[in-house]
Picture 1 (cartoon, helix red, strand yellow):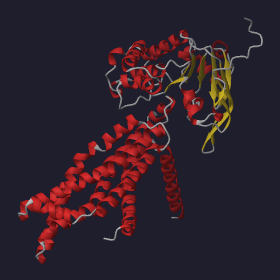
Picture 2 (cartoon, rainbow over the protein chains, first blue to last red; picture 1 turned 120 degrees about the vertical axis):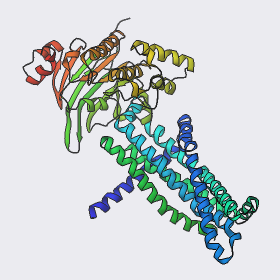
Picture 3 (tube, rainbow over the protein chains, first blue to last red; picture 1 turned 90 degrees about the vertical axis):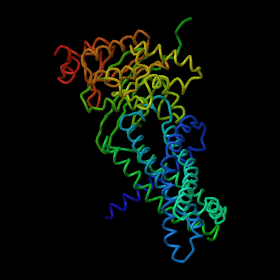
Length: 254
Length: 251
């Protein structure tokens, strides 16, 4: 038990040191622009269909539940507000973070792990390329950049899903739905949550890169790195979300 | 002009009393090697005797626990990270499994060092890549992905990638491992052509047969250097392991 705690503390320290090194390298020239662009495309553009589908479903489900609950009190007119506040403040950022940790985090863990065990990372170093800067910094930065954008996509997809459901089931006009949805929102509902997702991006990038870059044990190790990336990223994301939501209350009381 | 008073040229590679351990297990013990410029040096040893670790130390992928490693007279321990990366541009490294980037095609793999380290235009890079691949007999496979290549082809692409920046030193890890004898001899033929181009060659292998006609000097590694000399001299050694490894051609 004691040994397990020590191991956990040690691993946390190593991830922290890895994150600190990544942050330091972020500001050191030259930046690998070509690789960063490729990673933004891989992590961001290729994740968009997943985020849109998930957002539409999330919004529709939220609208359905809100309708069912609010009709008891005759407050169906509040459904657009419930959907928009729920998605923009809480579900959009967290669900985007969790989905990206599944799709991108696992991918980074497996890709870097595969490169490590097949000596491709050593080959980069042998070709006089700083592998940390080329592989890790670009991926972490790409995650930091794409998470807020994907969260925005998720938010609007969710709103669209809720609007379509409300129109199909409750016969609420889309125009009324959107007007009510945006009336309920303020900048303080949007900005802190977007800033929060950059932290999510940093966590997903750092944890998955750490696990992939330092993989040991051949193909089995690659599988473990990929699985651990998803598990650790998800747990840390949820914990950090609680802390950041609490902190954001100091900025804007809900 | 007289050569008197001139500083003697630094050897291409020098390992000086190098030791390396992993988790308390000593892998290399007091290893000293000197490879002169334009020399072809062979390092022989059984599996697990520290050959690949020695190569990794030579290009600074690992740090020695003690001892000095000098590349063209520069002590790797004293180099900054940027200087270490710069010094690696002078060494072409062929990995045991070639270590090709599996997301890049053969052409992109070979072009990668040129794109990174030169200011050449796209057309010029493609020409150089084509010529380099032609020199290893793979000019028709430029568009293939590494997964579509055989072991021998992968080695040849790896060799092309190691050569494309025209480095003065080439380091080769197990050129014949996992290959049939014909493909292995093709790889050795390519390496012997490098000798004609006045490259410094370091070849690490467990297969003495392919090396004896190629190298100027051989060393036998068994955690430490147990024999060093001309291939003919080592073939007559009284040491059973040295005789077995160097004389494996006769067997």
